[in-house]
Image (cartoon, rainbow, N blue to C red; front, side):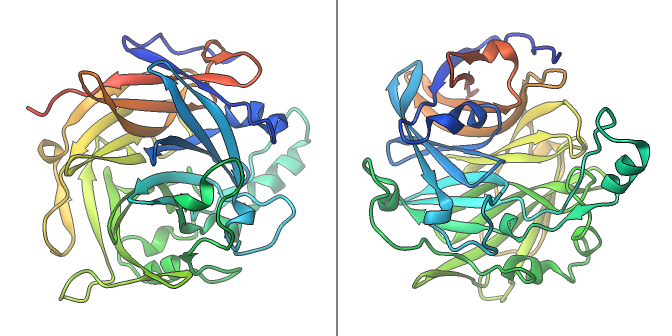
Length: 359
C-alpha cells in the first residue's frame, strides 16, 4: 500500500472530473495526470495514458469543475493509426489562442511483473523496448476547436511532422554532440525524454527529464512556425541556429515541467530515474537574444520551494501559474495520487502553493 505524503503547509483545490460524455474513463484520468496549463479561461489537464485532454472551469477559489474531455485522435493526425493510441502527453502550455501539446518523444522498456510471470518471461520483458511513434507529437490546437459543448470548429490542428520512422524534431537532434548517445535509450534510464513545454510566440522551450549530463539538466529551445495546417521548425536569429540547448544545475535532477511567470521560467525538477523524489521548483531567466548554447550554475536557477513526494505515490508531474488574490500561485497536480487526495468517484485534490516574490 502506497504511503501518502505529509499534508503540505499550503492550500488544496478540488479537480472534479466527471464529463457526462466520458465518465467511464474519468476515474482513471485522475490517477495519471502528467501536465496542466491555464489559459482561455480554463484549466487544461492531460494524462500520460491514452490521447485525451481534460478541460475544467473554475467554479470558485477552491474548485474546478464543469469537466469536458476531448479526444485528440479527432483533432490531430496521429503518426500511426492505432485503435488505442497513447501520446504520453508530458507538457501543456497556453500561448495566445492556442493550446500546445507535447508528447515525451521517448522510448520505453517494459516493466516485468514477477508475480505474474516466470523469470524467463520477466527477462524477456526487460529486453523489449517500445518505440511508439505517437509519442512524437508536438502540436498547437486553436482554443476555438475546444470550445462549447462540442468539439468546436472542424478540421485538424497543426502539428510538427512525425511518422512511423521519422520525426522533424528527432531528426534535428540525431547528430547532436550531447544528445545523440541518448536518443534510443529508454525513458527513466537517462534516455531522451521530454517533460514540459513553455511557449512565447514562435519560441518553444522543451524541458528534458533526460538525459541529465553529469548532473546538468537540459532545456531545448526551438523556433516553431505555423505554415497552413503544419508546424515547421524555423531558425533562431540571424546566426541560423536550428536549435540551442540550455544546461541548468538542478542538483542532479531532470526537468518534469516548465511554466512561465513574467519573463522567467519556473522549472519543476525531479529524478530522471523511477524514484519518488526529491521534487523542487527552480526559477530561471532565459537569455535574451539569440546566443548560442548556455550553461547556468545554481546561483542562476535558484530553488524557490520544495514539494512533497510520497512513497510510491504523489509524484508531482504538472504545474501551472494562477493569479491569486495575494499574487501568483502555483497549482500542482500529481501522478499516482495518494488515497487521501481522492474524493467521490472521479475527483482529486491538487495543491495550490503561494509563489514567493522575487528577491
